[in-house]
Length: 513
Image 1 (cartoon, rainbow, N blue to C red):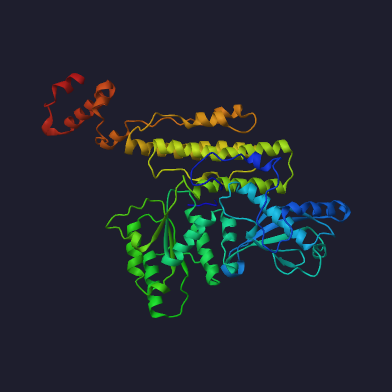
Image 2 (image 1 turned 135 degrees about the horizontal axis):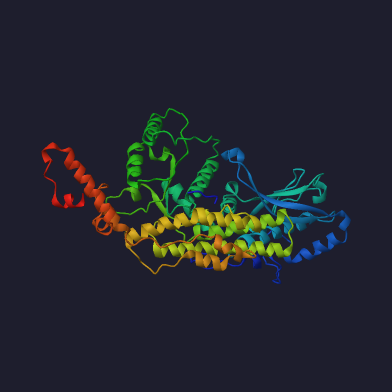
């Protein structure tokens, strides 16, 4: 369940995504107000004074790129990630109060594009500090450095590295920004882990379960301030590994006991429950955290011990975080692509229209599978995360994705639906909707390149009662005289080869011969 996850902002009730073009294109709306820390004496509406100072001395202006850094390489061994928010202009007259507001406005503008519905729960209060080229750090709301910002820029490209509030500030804002998972949900997952130490993420493939499990594991490592190396136990016997781990904890030998064990893609929930409970019967508070993922629906029966040992989190394409992740992820790709390369406004609007179409396609395919497949055969947002941010590249990427990935997947889902439920609804080929809504220019010439999805055969269930391979069905014998004659010839040859049956041929065989 990878992810990487496109991701994105509807609320728990699925709705059509808002247009990316309206988010990133020119807008006549007034600037958004925001809640800054109490130490901010300058609001966003006061930025006009900074702009006047900058324009009065354009020859002294420097354009600085603002980036957000997430992760803590020292504590978790995880590589730092950088996300470009935009750029600000710094002149010799720009003071720290003015720069604070410029950075805050850049961050708020980024959030309004990536998360227009505000589902993430991030605001300008999420900013903790930023650092300029020469290592001068400015904590938002803290003491101001003795030198002005332009004296800290140095030579070369000017970059401002912002940091969001994290563990040291008893916050999850940095983790929320990195994962694009809403803050209330992230706090809920962490609370379950801290209280119960065992968590299983259940849901369809491609909804981001493994992605979340990995980030939760890194968060726990950072929280405990343990510098640990990753261990790969995929090839070893899980029962043996857990048994050795339990013995090590019981003996208190002081060896390296892992803080977190991630069991990905659990195929048998009951077996895993027995395995974990049987192996880790040692001192509970010393046991590692266990995070599992499973694509199988977990049914809570009276004989099922999983809900007693683990806390369950169910993922669905209809609710957060899965249904909002794709849109937020695509928004982020669009924003960063626009910042990296200045494009013609017409080309930019076309790209935004193309990216805005993907969530609509996903919802359409999801509705199709709900009608014609089983409840656990769904399509996750991970299908679309690798989409390019160039219209020309997107065109060929989607045609290949549709013909070689989506169509085979839908075929399997429709076959399963027929076997389990029969024909539940009137068949509608999804390619018709796709062909009618292709978002790139001159798409008519590509319509014929998209494969159809033929309806599955309704007679599939009867195939399970096939006769032996060497005996064709009766209908074949009746409708194919040649096949009937060949079988009679074979039977005649068998009689001839048997000495005791010479002269005892069936009259019908003699007639055939």
